[in-house]
Image (cartoon, rainbow over all chains, first blue to last red; front, side):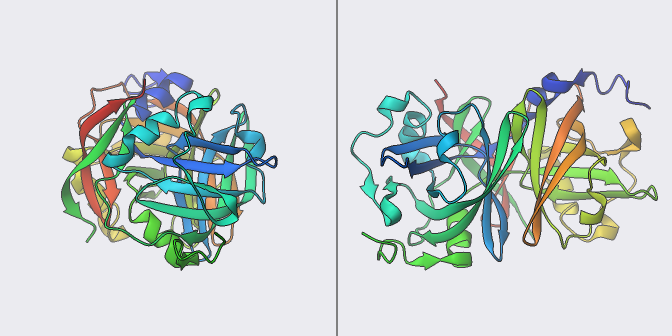
Length: 172
Length: 172
């Protein structure tokens, strides 16, 4: 078998998109504030733990996104986890920018806009690695809201929001 | 409200771990081959799309993991998506190293070990950003197996494997 194998007929962008149609990812909302004090926020499906000691998180962002210029090292951010009760927020923060903040946010540490979600992690952008038209952000985790018993978290799959279903195995 | 707010009582590592208990992540298996030709593989919950043009994927890895030395720029890797029918593989590739490959793998492009999974993405490690004791890998996506209709993909949540459940909203 070689790289022209009939078992691997897809290449490049088509290969990536096809495989990610079979992959689910957890949903969060990221909020922050511009240097002018305006609240910003967006729904993100790329938040991933990068290590617990020191506590670090990574996320991916397109350099073309309107939030990109604000997400530079030193910026404070709030990462909100989502569940079935907050799917309306996930949809709103993936929609038109001018409709995202409707006055239902609180003001949290560092003046961050805080939404009503199962849990909130506050941190500081520490590094930004640019790769082609995108970037990987590394965020230092600093503070979190009190732990609540989670409802079923929200995941993104095939262009829609899903709750998670049955537990079929433990990590033994 | 300030950073000592009673609404944000957790800090540091405790804050990170608490919030990620409310977050689900998609599961994959990564395989590769050492320069000596030995197959290596592990279950990973950090595979994330980084951009589609050019097609890029990111993943996070601990520098202390046994696979780390092999995952350097230029290394070919196969990323396998998982579903409810392949949870036994996910468990096996998170378990003892000597039990991961049991002879049921195929040999794919670039001699990569290929497991029977819903879809497989083949690529090359392009960059490795080291951060504290961890690293972010950027992988160029190159080839993929033919697209199949996915079963419910596997996600990791609260130390166990789950299938995804009901679709509750479209991304309109």
